[in-house]
Length: 87
Image (cartoon, rainbow, N blue to C red):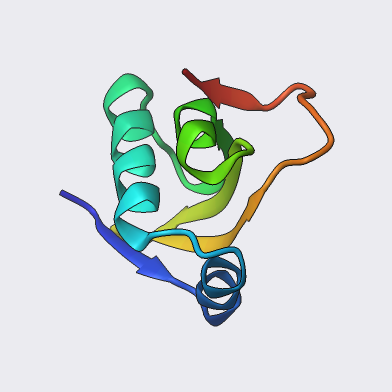
């Protein structure tokens, strides 16, 4: 499996919004199983976490040399646009 690292910003957001790190790892792994990831930046929204965190959680991450770096994590309060939505 690819190594998943969290940036300092994402760790602060997860602490601020009380989001569990394992939930984010599971969401990224589910996205990774359904889609092939190439180098670049991705943003996904996990609706399944809305039951736990009241709102869907948006995860922004980049795929680099054999690792995934989570850039930011936060709850979405405004609604959905054209993001990749996990159900």
